[in-house]
Figure (cartoon, rainbow, N blue to C red):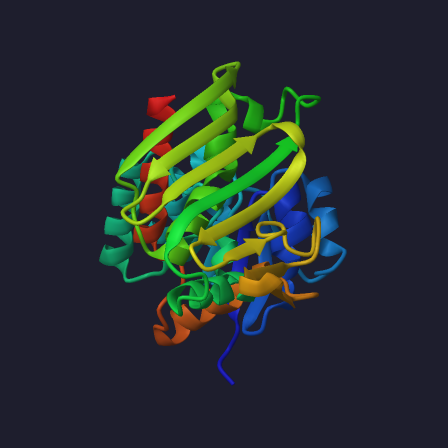
Length: 321
């Protein structure tokens, strides 16, 4: 068996502590080896399940650690490109939290550095690793719903009580579209393989960040509608509505966190089939797919070029609204 990939994490973010660090720890072929934080107290939650974790007091110190093969970057959005490039320059593979960049054009430097170094760099768009989305793509390509007419989705949560949250601050790349637009927009692109021809948007902003975004778009073969919000009761779903059926994912983005991952296919004669994936952890699958790509060149399910396309759609929506 090949040696595991040794992972380091830049920063003790809560999401890293609760989701990605345990996923790296559980994933086959991966080892959570190091954390960079200047606050020893913040390392305690990581050491609770990974007691042999090396703790560096700076991001640069972790990048200089010769024992680290890959880094996960969960920093605030506006720091993603900077530290992804630094990690690649340090000879580390990089999995960066989404959005990797604040503008599509910023992806170009990362793509160039990836190609120059021969290292793997990717955005942590975890849903494409989940079997519910792999199944949705397969069903669509098999014609299970006939000719596609409409894709619509919603992703919302409410963080109005936390004005200091990085998602509520423009200087840290806040806003509903920068935060969760990748899910509704990106999932439609992933399943259909199409790119938007025209994008429209109605946005409501507070403190110079969008807190409600209704994005509509014309794709070559279907119409698209998406609502993202940081000021609504939590809800998420995606539906692909064709001439012969409807495919609905009722917990498409936070599978088995806010609900069970399930796909319902409604067809003629009131027929309906439901598929469920209890207990599947898409963060673990993401780490394992990343490792396979590093070890043997297996194509990664979410290359930077795909992520750049989603960011381009987000950029257009933000400009249109």
